Length: 405
Image 1 (tube, rainbow, N blue to C red):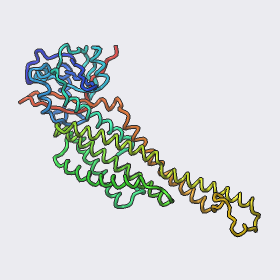
Image 2: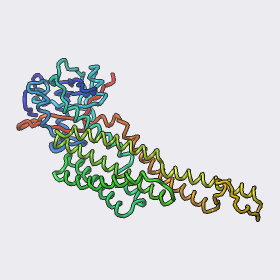
Image 3: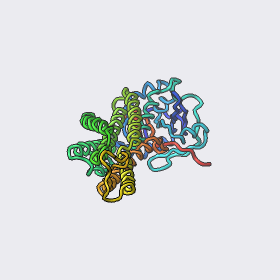
Image 4: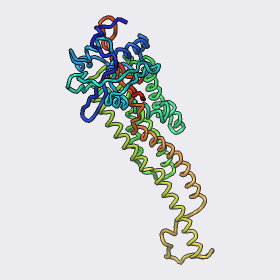
């Protein structure tokens, strides 16, 4: 395979370094000539990776630095990987054998050499940290979404709880979000009309979240209130979920087209996720339907005590003298009607608990940064022919792992 520059001086085996910035660490790895050639041979020209997508690569040029080891190795055809994968960090730190994993399994095995001199200039490549961190947060919340299923399925599960107008808005939002994500997963990049499409969906979703964010704070004082509270809670959760999904797509879009805004988008997404998590926690703790059920049950108990006390104090047929009243707690009516109300609210509470359980599940999943999500990596290399254009992707297809023995 013809390469852009000479392979002389380019490492044959993986070489890397751990870069640190503001308490964060990532591994930057030159996969070496052997593994790079094996990877390139396994790629199709139009779609080198099955997972991930395109990243705008212009910012890499100043990051690599003219005349740096990395720049020279790229010209020779080697492939680079940047990741927070603990296996990569451990491998680089110990200098043990390494296995380069590709889409079809191990593509190279070799002793790993920790770089004696920096692959990159001394100045920390902030954009590299920002990009890898952005991919982690996207992957993390993509996986949190899997705890609930596809967005359209989530809407369908609460369809019977929604009125026609808001259901139509939420269903349309779910379809558009899933449609855009599906196109991206199929083509590995966003179409030119995606910003406008996302903007329209975001407008509707933001209005719905604001609307139901106010309604979920209202008091529950009747069975009708309790029914409405369950509906409001489900709508609030769905609108919040879609809003976060839109921001995740916006962040992926920025990684593809506009690296200058990636850091601000990532920061905004982190803050929104934290805020929404707190909002979910608050409505879960408030449990307005549960509180009303408790009050109504207490009322039924007091009414029963009132009946028994009244029967004990006044034999049937006797009346209290004019002006004499029973204590306040002994005057409340009791009968089948109150019992039926308690049972109705119990059923409503079960529906409320179902929505609250989904919210808790999502919050828990979103707080866990799994090893799988940390396997998202940035892979970059130069094309072997022509002008040697620099290409960058985010993917899970390629990673470095420690070898046993």
